[in-house]
Length: 79
View: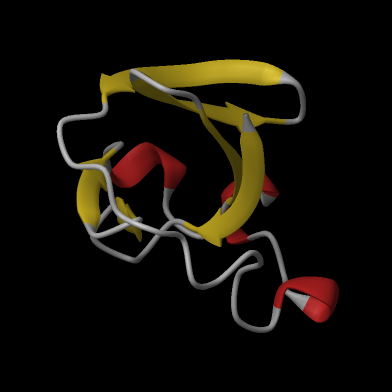
């Protein structure tokens, strides 16, 4: 099991290990944790699971963290 971070795009999607995952516009801008397991990806935000997607492609993960993650502004949490 491996954990990586990603930022949900303005279109509501992200990419990990060559797989595009769509979460929806409601999650855009959020920094999420993707738990990579043998058979699935689990997407978490603040410890809450947002989605689980089957892992149909086995490809090496080349980026462990989201670009700009340490100072990234979480647009999804603003009122």
